[in-house]
Length: 208
Image (cartoon, rainbow, N blue to C red; front, side, top):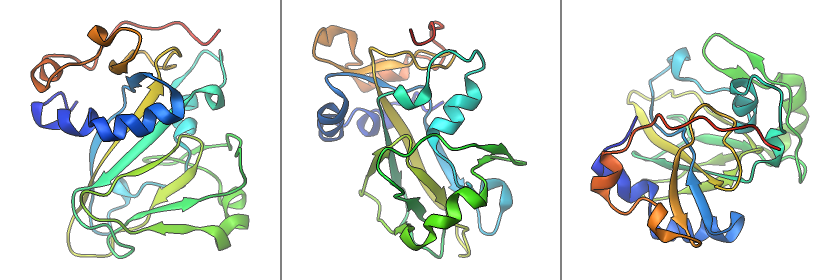
């Protein structure tokens, strides 16, 4: 679950947290969903389909309380190797401002927004070709996918998320504070502390 000392400087990078704070405020939770992800060459199980991250939150949240579009979240993605169209870089559908939560359907390995809801925007799709050290920051309601990897090598990446810590996660896990302007002592202080924490935290109540 990436509670490793070497991941601390990525998740708790001060420059990234400054940008996140400008978007959602100074009480920042590292959302309990972070992954080092391989995209294998021409391998359907690692092909991430068109989706909004809010669609997965809705899928995980079984109780019907609260609206995932109300969650103040920032998604973050960085490649560990150069990401190009050939090896499956991310692709975004900018869509209209204030995009709603689209219907997501369960496929064999991932959720997917049906093509009839996405294809009308196909002339707006943006390929995100980036290099190691580049960071993509985007809204949790933005439609995106990973293109197929047609190269002969694995395309590795890391994805993680931040959330306004005053809101519940709508997941069984609470996550950890990455920054707190109200009480800095409550946030994660060091790589050693991060490595000694656990993904599993106390359950939360639903959005009021």
